[in-house]
Length: 334
Image 1: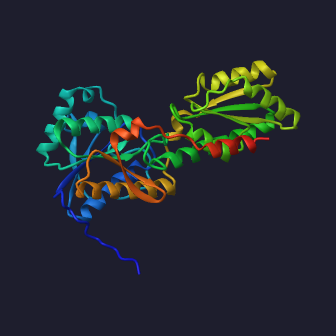
Image 2: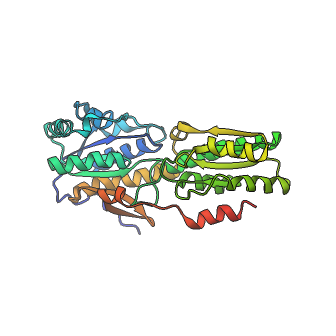
């Protein structure tokens, strides 16, 4: 029999928490907001929703959220709280204004759903004004240290893969080379997963700045083996991006080459089940972390369990791509 403890200890005496989403949106953010609100409500804790991230916080754009306010949101992409970047928040004066509003609302802790830039903003607030901050990793890039996966990553991969499958069909029909750029300014996690799942002939990621010229020979060999079309995946953070890779192939082989940049389409859409589950687990864990007296940490999921990582470590330590998967991509591309 599974024992379920519905009441979580609250040694920190938390009575009200705030939640915001910041930086780039990611599918599953709404599921995380929903989890925060409902986990808090189950413990008799009120939740204040902050609109437009830190930009809204320093302007006092806040309102109470109850369980019914987050009904029918778990399947929605984007963020119901909206998100924005704020130059004002980068100043001590802007953060002081946000802290003043949080105190006026009686908030005992802030939950920040976002990436490393958002965590920076929350960490400075805590250090300067003593308001406990818990980070929830919400970014499609999957580049935060301290968690196996970030909210939005699984959906971004599926969205990109769907596009790759469609482009492969038309590439084979016209015997063209397609160079497809996926998101990943500083990390190649999306590109690598899409390359393996999409059967790509080559993948370029920021973690391995191999020369563009290497792809020319690969494409030539693919043609000699009778392939009618080739798919090349490029992370946006690779030097020169997809356009540079496409130009090199066109110049080096003379084959018709098309470049497709998927862009922000990868951020949108309904989150897949894995993102909904991850967001639900981490949103609940963030509430319990504040109740336990935790502060200045990110809640993550590692090997199936909930972990706490100090916020500075999430951006100071790098999260490498899987070298085994990178090798697998090369081996299976023959």
